[in-house]
Image (cartoon, rainbow, N blue to C red; front, side, top):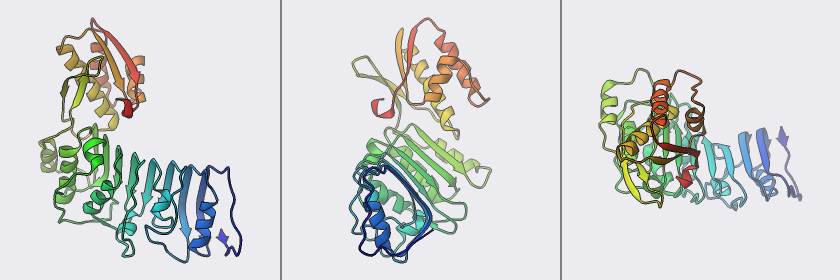
Length: 323
């Protein structure tokens, strides 16, 4: 669809909460900005395969959409400042954004809790740029990265002197797809393991298969700062544990956390325990005593056996923020 130049006209969509733009061509950037700015209560924005004749810097002149919760954008069609209030952000073709010579600053995403970054064919992947972005996402809890099979990874990545606030204080999940057996990728994974105090899951999808044994050995032997922890009824810390579970799914990693946690409180001698889990699937497995696939079945059986021991256990789902 083509949108002609809008002379002396405005857009007024005061109740629109979801806007999905796909295969749309605007006469210029100003027209796109008029459309978006005419949606004052917009909560969900998706921009895919949208063209404009003029570009815009990452800072741009556009004010943030104050009600926006989730944004899914491709390349730099929409200025990032416009979506800087979101809680969930997906950016495709991020390589084209961070290597654009016109970009001079990256906005602060003060509310962002989940960030998905995707590189595309023949993009250059640079972990330095990822870390710079993390500095501007102080509350980030979940980081998901898809490097792109044919992207190029910079080899000269040096361990940063400083750690972003989100990594040290909030990050619980880090997923890296198309991970390669190169020094930069391994060093970044270690950087997360050694600095993310609240990290629960580091998920790595390796390309190409199989995973080199030495890379696995390096990651498994890496020191970690993120133990699981146990608290008493008043919130006092009683103890904790950390366990290397290797390369596995998020579901299996969650099961390992439950199993090791139950074993730990059992050793501490408690007879009345409350288990708070942020995975609804794991809560379901524990309560219904049923696993729909073979994945994690052996761990689930060990958990069920512990649940049948002589003690009282209350199982509940709790969001990460309350954990």
